Every structure is written in C-alpha cells, then in structure tokens.
Image 1 (cartoon, rainbow, N blue to C red):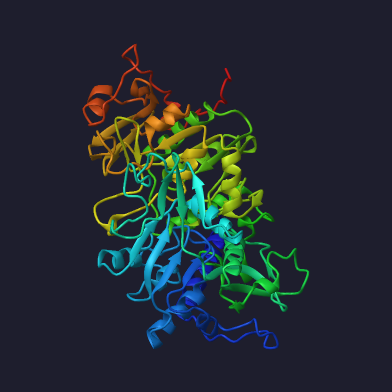
Image 2: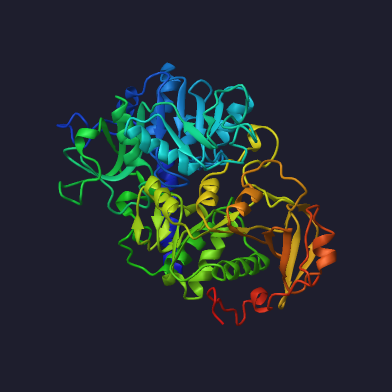
Amino acid sequence: MNWWDRTQIAAQLARAALAWLRHDTSYPSPVPENPKFLSARDAATLVRDGDVVAVSGMGGHQHASIIYWAIREAFEARGHPAGLTLLNVGGQGGRGMAPGTLEELGRPGLCTRFITSHFETFHAMLDLAEAGQCELQCVPFGVLTFLFAAQAHGKESVLSHTGVGTFLDPRVGRGSPVADLDDEQLITVHRGALRYRIPKIDVAVFNAPAADRHGNIYVRRCAVVGESAELARAARRNGGKVIVNVGLIVEEGYDHIFLPADMIDAVVYHPDTEQTAGVFHRTYWPMFTTESDISIEEGLARVRFINSLIPAIARRTPADAALARLAATTLVANVPKGAVVSIGTGLPEQVAPVVFDAGMLEDLTLLVESGVVGGLPAPGVYFGAGLCPDEIVSSAELFKRCVARLDATCLGVLQVDSLGNVNVSKRGDGPRHYVGPGGFIDFCEAAKTIVFVSAWMHRGEITVNGGRLRVIKRGTPKFVEEVDEITFNGPRALKAGKRISYVTHVGVFELTSRGMELTHVMPGIDVREDILNCAPMKIVLPHSRQPPHMPRSIVSGQGFTLRWAGSA
C-alpha cells in the first residue's frame, strides 16, 4: 500500500467517527410521498414496551446505528419503550468503546433480557447482568439462525444434537441461563437431543444497502446479509413489525428484490448508514462484495493497515506467525483438495492467509458463520466479512450447508483438558467475564476434522531465533487437568469418529483413544522442560517416546511449503 491509499483509508475512518458524533435521529425522509419512509425517531415509536426485538448482523457488520440511537433517545426522553428482550446472533457490541453498536440499548430498564451466542463485546449488557438488571440467555449461533427460520414457518422450537455433552446440555451444565440459574430455561432434553426455543419475535431490525421509492429492499454490494430475511419473515408471521435502515435510495430494478415492500413497515434512510465498520453504503468498499475490483492481496493489506490503527486488535508476533504455519500444515494434511473449511475468530484467522500465500486458496472453500462463502475471511475488526467472496448468503443458509457438508473447521480455545474437552465460552467468574460460544459448537458438531489453534500459555512469552522457538517466560497454563466449562466434548467427538488436533506454539496434540497425544514438536522446544513440566494436562507421548520435530521452515518461514493430504 502506498501513502495515498493509507491517507484515503484514514480519512474514511475519520469521516465515520465524525458521523457517529453528529448522528441525527430526526433526519427527514427523502420519500415524503411514501408513508413507509420514516425518520429513525418516528420508526422507534413502532417498538412497544416488552417487545422482543431481533437484530441482524455480527461483529462490525449491519449496524442499524441510527435506529439504536433513536430507541435509546426515546427511552431516555419518555421512559418508553422499556423492558425489551434483545436477540442477536452475537458480537455486535462495541466493548464499551465504539458507538453505534447494539450496546446503545444496554441501559437499565431498556434492555431487561438479552439472548445471543457471543457476549464478549456487549460490555453494557454484561454490566447490567452483573448488577442483576438484565437476564442473559445463551443459544449457539447456528441454532439461533435455525430458530429464526423456524419462526418464519410458524414453528416454536428446533431439535438438534448441537450442544449435546456441553454446558448447554442440562444433563451436563446449566443450559441457556448465564447469570442466574433461576432464569427461564430455553433448552430441554428430548430423546438424546436438545430442544431449543426462543420467545416470539415482535420487531425485526436490520441494515441493508438500499431501498427504492416503493420500499423494496436490495442487498447488492452488502458485506453480509446475516439473518435479515429470516427475521423479517418471523416478525411478519408473528404479526410484528419490520424496520429496515438503508444507506441508498435507488431506482426500482436496481437489482433483484431481496424483500418486497409489502413485508416492510418502516424504511429509515440515513446517508451515514454503514456497509461495515467505518465504511458507508454510499462509499462502499467493493473488496467486501462479490463485485470486488481489487485482488485479495491488496484487500488484505488494507485490512491489516486498519487493524494496526485499532488498539483493541491483538498484535501478532513472529511466534504467532509460526503457529499459523503449523496450523495450516495440520489442516491441509488432514483434508483433500476441494474441502469446505470454516474459520473461527482470533488466532484461526491467521491460518487463512497462510493457505492463500501457498497458492492453495482456489482448492479450498473457506467460510465464516456470517454467511460469507469463498474468498479470504477478513481478519480483525472486519471478521465476518470476506475479501473477494464467491457468495454471500444468509447465516441460516450457511449453517444449513455446514450440516450437509463441512469437511473441517479451525477454531480457537481458552482452555483444553486431559480428556480433550475445550472451553471457549467462560473466561472467569460472573457475567462480566462471560464470552459465549458463538458458532463454535455448531461447527464442532458439523465438521469431520477439527483443528484447534491456541497459544500454549496465557500471558507467556515465546520468541523466535532463526528456525527455533524459545520459551522465555511461563504464563498461566491453557492446557489444564479440567476445563472450567465444556464447550466442546472431546470424548463424544472422538466416539463420533472426528479427527481432532490441538495446534500450539510448542507443537501438535491429537485426541486419541490413549488420550491427549503429543504428535509433533516445534524446533527449539524441549519436551520435558517446555511441555510436560508446564501443563497440568495429562499428556501421552508416542510409543517411541520421541515425538518428531517439525521442520525449521515452519518457524522461520523460509522455504516453507504446504502439502495436501496424501501427497508425497
């Protein structure tokens, strides 16, 4: 990237920050002759006390910010609407820092129940729960999308094996309640499976790129479509309302109609409505669409530059780069060409660029839970979008495809234990430290091969010296005797015939009938000093007692290559 590209990107982000500060919820309708077109302030009056409000989108995508602000302002001015139940698949908070996210509704008395799959970014809701002012309920991402689709067809529940043997299974853990076990249980056991339900949706809210003057909705040049259609149909089926925030007014026939005007109750136009975090629909970035005008390589450089400007985004080290190469090596050694692979957030994001750099991206289909298929999953603040994607489908359609076929998944971890169980959902005690599983459990249930990608220690220090790794400082072990919460049930997955690898800075473990077996070690790592003496987890060594070392090229990157399963 040259200095001009960097200047333009920085200017775009500055314009977005200014828009967050000067938002106008009374911005007038550009189509006064059509009563469907309302200001955000007027649209907020459609939300009643006690409504179940479902919002589409994940992460930085599909923020209907102007509507969130309008609902919050109405509550602060009049005390209404109050006592809302909010539904979102996850991650659409701002960690208590970024404005214009769903956290705008995290006010005492405004949001009294919150149902999602991933809580970590919703600091406002977690603080309310810590104070006993908001009920928290956890349902897996994929299951939530199926529940939205089910309500659209008049069904009240979904039966699934997703979550069996995890904390969501009332026979194993607490089920859906997060903060208070006396809260309503949304999950019951039914003949060895789990039956999930959610309350009926009264109001659907989502962000879409454009509407025509009749009120038809279009999604051309979106970054994600999320759960928009499923939520709209569910709200309609339940006799509720559909509120759409758009950033463009276009002519009829602009594209195929995503949702017809007769399904929409209110269209809220605002020129600063975002395609994705910091990017307006009116100045959309093609690289996040199926009409990209730049290469993946150029798009990745732009995203990495933006991530470098954001303090909350983790800074990756040379040791992390070595970990990504090791994880990519493990992945491609266990899947055939043409495999379908889902990519999780965090360290697993780093695996995809390694596959791309090796020239193997055309022989894999990578996808993420938002519904983006193909291309390269965008890392950091734009996770959930894709660079030069092949398709953008609804998240419900994405998980439906995964149930039919998901060859492998790359996912992160917080803890791993002696039975191969994984915790990604609980970081500490109390609701303030709760994370939730996101789509993790759904992907683990669907995938044939699972590659977990994890730092060896929390807050440890590992350095790279040439082609060797060295543990400089021991941190808190992530590989423990027993996890704090079972988000992935190792014995159950092993019994189902799944192949399960745990890739770390120090080497690779596989879950076998013998236990957690150390199968490969990174160059420079001492098995006894750096692994056996560092982890409370019971570790099984190969029958030879000497796990092989990986080549130094994985650490240095020099001469590094990837090989498909079965290749010489």
